[in-house]
Amino acid sequence: MDTHTAMQTYARVVELGSFAAAADKMGQARSVVTRQIAYLEEKYGVRLLNRTTRKLSMTDAGRAFYAVSYTHLRAHET
Image (cartoon, rainbow, N blue to C red):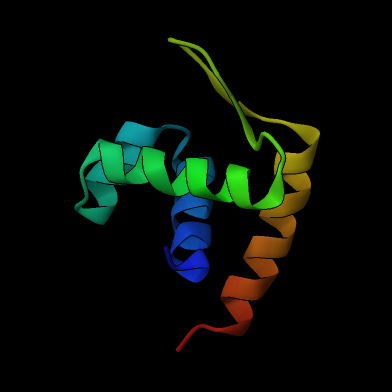
């Protein structure tokens, strides 16, 4: 899986506040978004998001990862 794409997906989930909204905005299936976030969590060995049926929130590691992702993505914009 492409880490850069997964980072873009993570940033979109955080900015929109849900997996479903991010999937809809990106034109992807929700399962794709879920797999990309799971990939990042597995790759880096940390939970990035706390998920409940009603709420999504970033963990401390998730906040730090978002800051790094945001900087990386802005540096690689075309």
